[in-house]
Length: 390
Image (tube, rainbow, N blue to C red; front, side):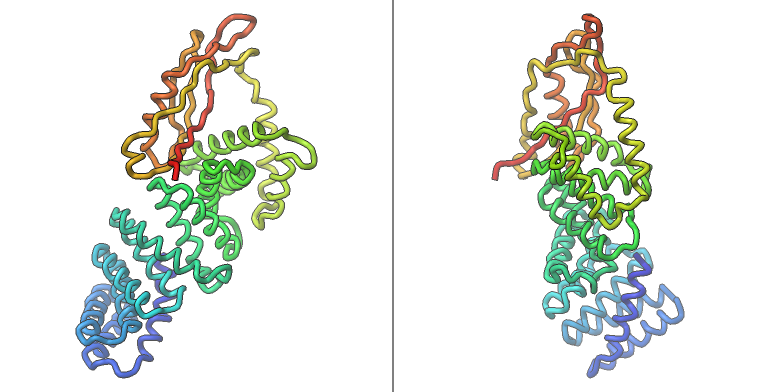
């Protein structure tokens, strides 16, 4: 991110240096700032940036120029590790550029950096608000995202991650799809960020019961993340989500044939600019593993549910109007009870976990059998969708 800051800062320096009619105290402070920048003196850079911004604010200079000085101040504060100062400065830069009706790219850039610094400060509420403003500014560009190619994908992804963490799953999904589209325009090859965007999109599409789209998004997410971030902490959740979406898709319709879900999936994968021969080998291995291991350890007569009540909606989540998804695994004992319950992934994290565990604990099954004898059934997978009626 610092490299992008420096690149954009050069543009800001040129714009400010070309401004006419600035008060002498602002000009002097800005010249000190530029000298510190040329010398690589970060301490002097911060002091001169603070001086230029405060002098400009005191003198009441035009909003567009003051916004640039505020951005320089935020940049210098970040370089010096003064992140609370940086958060305020980037926010001021964004607000001023909004009021000056600046170019959408400029406004989005400043709001995005305000969101990132707020996240660094663990101020997720402010980060959420700033990321929304960044996304709104980018949406003004429509499909013409080229001027914001350096950061548009990351800005939408930040929005998606923050919305997902707040239980705004549909909102997260929309931002994730925008992120993935921006990455497909700007990237030469896939990145972990692109994989995460597809993952968040797949979770949202699952909650919307668009299982075809969810299967595609999650399939691509797993392919990308296994290459770019094989140890990512959400890897198990991605796998569970794909298994769940795939199963639900086949439950909704008969598979196979030219118009079957696998044919549609393959057609969509073929259209993805990053789905090249690089992923074909791993997909073939996955299919072979599924063919070889699907029935391994599974009794000849599988466990069948007798009572499966849905979990109660947590009161606090309902009051906060939160949606969520939980993926869990469990075992069915020889007596038809459940145990070894584990939440393998959830969004937002921790909010719906206990309600899901409580529900599974109350489920009963006809036990699995082998040769007519009840046996333990490991590795049963389930998903819970929590969605408020609106």
